[in-house]
Length: 254
Image 1 (cartoon, rainbow, N blue to C red):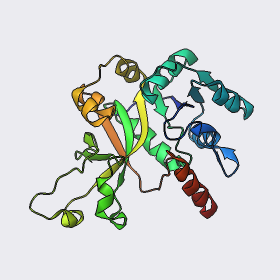
Image 2: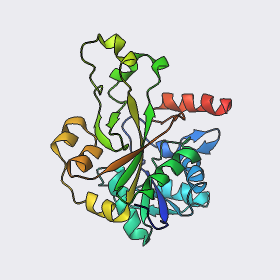
Image 3: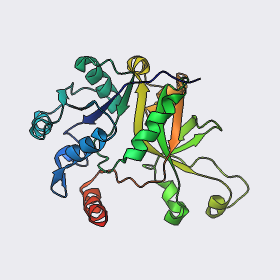
Image 4: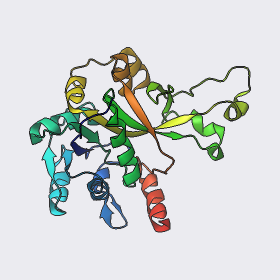
């Protein structure tokens, strides 16, 4: 079933506090603050963009480069909850809210557009991105619990997300698994129908979410449908100062 033409707002949650990298949104890549790089990428795909923060330093930095920014609570459990507050307090009437993580300075226009295209199907509640696992990385990389894996059905709806390796390939040594199954990793970009985002904030944490520490499992357990778009483009998420060094090298190569 086809949708009417939808309106979108992109919201970039940006916290100052971080255990591994305090002040991360203001860290500079090629002389430009990371939050500004993400903002400019978002502007290429959406008419309405806003940063949602809990810190005056980030607020002032966004204002300084001419961006739209709103203060939000320090108590949110997730970027999804921060997006929900920002959407309401901005007075937005957009049909779809796109949550672009503030530590993805190289998110591409093609990736953002592919998530938007998921909503051509009116049955989609939430959309996100998956990337085919590159065998060149070596099978050992799949053991990284920070690399979230996802399995999908034939209609590209997520069936499960896990920090463990999924699927499990029976009857083969693990070093042979890449030759007998396809693996996909999750890229943390979300888009929600506005009415769905409103309801997500009311959901209690679920047993699977608590086990894996993945909020999207709360949504799956509650029956929400997450459509996955595929991307083969690289992303460099910034979690540590070491990642920042990699981003600088990547920028030089662009």
